[in-house]
Image 1 (cartoon, rainbow, N blue to C red):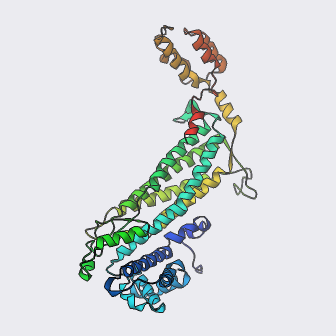
Image 2: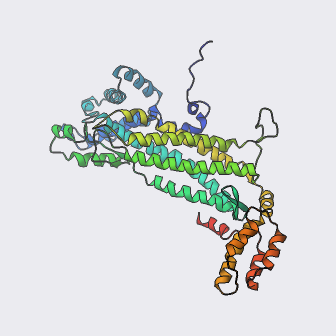
Image 3: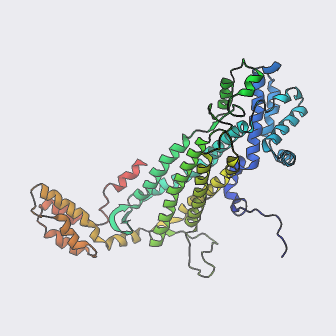
Length: 459
């Protein structure tokens, strides 16, 4: 058997590339290296802006030319870094050499020794990861989550009055509305999404073991903690002043745990919608040209929700591993985080793919109200709750002598299917006031939905 030409091993880089490609701008190796160049360049500018070590602030054109190193970062830089890293065996050192090489080409060789000045690799890496993850989350992942939430909110409003049988423990239960059940998911997602929007993105810039030792040896008169804080915050990320060689990654642990939490809520949604489809509550809208089964022509499979379910499980496992691994570093530094963080894009990629499938799947279903109505009409026993509650109120008010309302309704309905006529006959024979009796006789499973419709307004 002949070998295949080189192929992507991950489906994210093959079958599903179109759905997740926007993440690659930030969470790929190239995206990380572009951010590293950005940090190195901005650090050079920060040092020269303060005229440190006999330098003078660069003029506007020189700064613009320097910033083009990361603004125009492309295939030429990717190839250059790959060739250099093959020699250095060190990714951040290769980036330093790239910047130094470009300084010479720009006529700025006189400040070349300030490239990567007093930095440990993790100063550059922590800032670069904070930048790339923040941008990936805020510019790609959160908008995709918002698109799903918007779809859900619209569906909740559309179906707010669509009465349906609830199924606690999978069994017929007090009716609700489809809109209210969808609103529950919206409420949950909005809450965790707000936590993610407020998440910190932190970096350190304090040298080999977080003590600014090299900085002080070069110039003990400079307020290095203040300068590096100003530099990091100027990049649009937060500053961690108390660290080992690495930034402690706690912000990443918090973020990935919350992303996993979102995935759990969405997984719950995917399995519930799948179940509603299997019950006939939702009909699937045929997609022109699509095939549901290779042998059964009639089938429309809920593949969007099944794909989302599987990808959320993969993403959740990766997010859990990231959170578990990144919270710990042996003594002042080990390299377990280096390998682990290279999979941040994979975790968000599977999550983004799930979001794409959920958004599309929600646009390919329609409510089958006749099915919901028929289900309600065959389960009049769910009104037993209302009847026994009204009887309790009547007993308390002195308008009834019934000794155990709950037991009375349990004997009538538990494990039994009763119809509208059976229930009406039972209500008419109850020892309760006429007003209460009329309220109960007016009830149907379809109208016994309480405030379900109004609750949709809360999302």
